Each structure stands twice: as C-alpha cells, then as structure tokens.
Amino acid sequence: MSIEKKKVRMNKQRRATAKAVRVDPDIVLTVKDLTKTYTIGNSTITALNEVNLTIRKGEFIAIVGPSGSGKTTLINCLGALDFPDSGKIIYNVDAEGMGLDIMQMTNKQHKKMRLKKIGLIFQFYNLFPILTAYENVELPMVIAKKDTKLREEKVKSLLKRIGLEERMEHLPTQMSGGEQQRVTIARALVNEPLIILADEPTGELDTETTTNIMKIFLDLKNAGESILMVTHNVRIAEVADRIITLTDGEFTGEKKGGKSIEDIYK
Ligand SMILES: Nc1ncnc2c1ncn2[C@@H]1O[C@H](COP(=O)(O)OP(=O)(O)O)[C@@H](O)[C@H]1O
Ligand SMILES: [Mg+2]
Image (cartoon, rainbow, N blue to C red):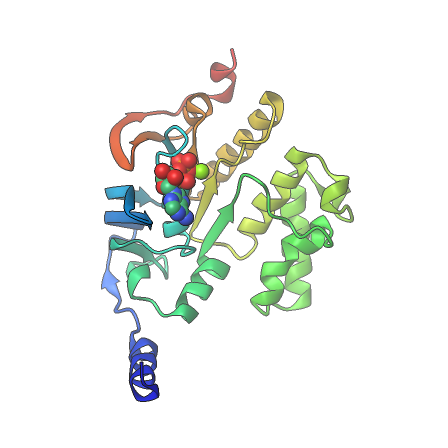
C-alpha cells in the first residue's frame, strides 16, 4: 500500500468514533448476532455463531459449556480483547442509557473500556508477580490517573471487602490460589466498572475455595454489580440468576438459577 493510501486509512480510523445509541438504562450490555470464526490453513472454526444476549443491571449470568464451546472467545470479544467477524456489542457506557458499540470504537476507546468499564477476571489470575496484592489492585487506578488519596481509600476498602486486608503486602507467590483470585476480583472492581466478566474464575480452585469465590460473587451481585461468568462447572453456575448453555458456539438453552451455595454442596 502506498504511503498516501495508508494515511487516508489512518485518518478514517481516527475519525471512526462510535455513534451513541439510546438503550434501556436498565440494560448494561446487549449482544446481537455475534459471530467469530478462526481460520487456520484451510480450515475455519466457527467459535461463536450468531450469539444474542442481554444483561440487566445487577444481574448475575452464568454461561456454561464444555471445553471448546466458545466461552473464552465470548469473554475476549465482550472484553474488547479480540474482535468478532460480525455482530454488535453495545455497552450502556454512561450507565444512563447512552449505548456505544465496541465494534465502532477507536483503539483509544477500547483502551478506556478495558480500563474503566469492564472488570476482567481470568482463570489464571494474571497478577503482576513483582507487585504486592495492594499494588496489583491499585494499578488500574494509577493508569486511570486517580489521585493518591482516593486510590488508598478505594484499594484498602476493596481488600477489606474481600477479606484480604492482612495480605496487602504479600506478593502473588506468597498467596494461595484462592487469595490470588480474590485480589483479581478487587482489581477488576477498582475503577467501578459497568460489568464484571469472569472466565472460569474457579477453574484452578478446590471445592472449598470455589465456594468462597462464589460467595463473593453473590455478595457483589447483591450489592448491585452486574456479572457475566463463563464456566464448564455446571454445578456452581446454579448460583447465578440465569444459566445459559453454550454448545459449539451457539446458545442452546437457558434456565433459572438462584440456588444458594449451601444447596449446591449439600
Ligand atoms: N486463537 C485461536 N485460533 C484458532 N482457533 C481458536 C483460537 N481460539 C479458540 N479457537 C477455537 O475456537 C473454539 C472455541 O474456543 P474457546 O473459546 O477457547 O472455548 P472454551 O473457552 O469454551 O474452551 C475451539 O474450537 C478452539 O479450538
Ligand atoms: Mg476457555
């Protein structure tokens, strides 16, 4: 491509700011006809096939499916870490009914979404090994240029909320898996996102620790947080308000949840 053409394309990209659309203020996220394929050599895999989803404020949704069903692909697309081939991902960005489609956003807007609007939690924690629990939680606020006093108040209150005030100065290697996952939950919440997206948050944890993490999720839900969790663990998914089944990239069923964690492990 000539330099001229490249410049034209770059200018177009810079100008391609997402147009706001009116959305129901009670709906945090609307996903429409989301399709994502991967091509390797001659073969194409359809990881997501026309997925539709609506998440209301304060709702806890679990998506269950076996390995390879498209769970991580979905989280990555919703988290602006990867991009679908087609479809819409509309976030109620100002939480008051102004929606923006991720697909129309600029790179800068994607960065802002990941930093401030979406709280991501992964199976393998993804903490910085050289930072303490406190510093790991604080980092997104530092990047968001929040002032020191506000950071200190927020980080301390979140660490307290997840029961880790005694572990503030610990490095990830000095904490158990469950403790590390609690740190990532605090980190996900620190910039007060619109939604928590969790990919197999208890995948590496034993039953007791899994129970504790699910109790934290339920507390968050009861405090008004919106949560989307994907997991292969059909049992723990029952605590969510709605459980959606994902099979080979398609939603194939939905049921009501709302079970207590005690009922599940009775
Ligand atoms: N980067 C990639 N390149 C090619 N194929 C991929 C890639 N990521 C995922 N896939 C394929 O897409 C399908 C869905 O994968 P994934 O979303 O990771 O499923 P899950 O998280 O439910 O195990 C699988 O068949 C997987 O092999
Ligand atoms: Mg996965």
